[in-house]
Length: 330
Image 1 (cartoon, one colour):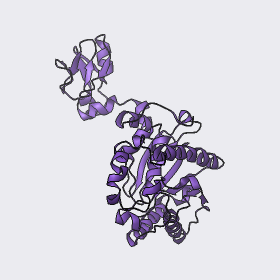
Image 2 (cartoon, one colour):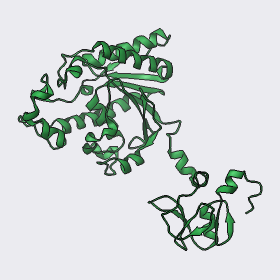
Image 3 (tube, helix red, strand yellow):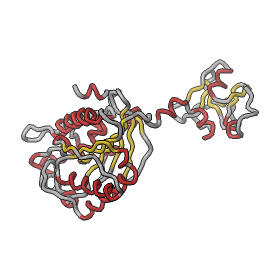
Image 4 (cartoon, one colour):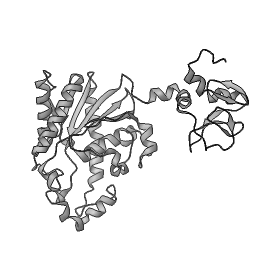
């Protein structure tokens, strides 16, 4: 087809294969009996019939994998389905997962776990106020459900969020405390400095937390993972009766597991820095209606990132085995 009416950028991005002009590399390759594909090495458009890459000027050249198509041309080649996959649908239920602010145990390098003896530091209170300001300005009006860990550090953080929303004239729904939203249980390590337990199994735990077994026979990560999956069942069931987002205020290790489990990951993803939760960080998980697993996630506060799909996580992070959320509950 003619490109006379197309914008200049589109005309420059059009490709030529065997002298035939087309609007995309796929159409051009079809003219010469082939199919346009992208090589994994450089994503340059390739004429499949000749196995040659489409050069910067749009002509088939030898050496597939050596040339990248111009940015404008690559944008033209982006399928509509892929564009839609970059973000969740408007019907998806949104879950906001936040970690508590810094505690005195965090500042000291002391293990907290399920020990409820720590409290927010001055810095932690400021972090919680910052999270509250963000929620009040950007999220509060869409929050229909609130869940919180029963541990003091999480409740202190939620109180700061509630206060910020109230100051903005928005009352958050009454929070539901759920015991299984507590932090990972680290047994005889809790209350001790990390420097004190380096020779007491800590190195083995950090190397392979999924396989580590405590001296008393407890397996901290499998136990936490089971709770994370159970939390999703309860929270999703509790959020199914009304529209709006759900806010969950809990802990770092639990937050890692809940995000990874929602996206279809395995316990091995616990070690991935992709799912690290800083103090008062907040992430968003999107779950399509009736879907066995969440479809997307992103960070909201303190730094906002673009949506990432669950499919992208399976390609980018270790430990993704293609399982869905229903299977994880088995």
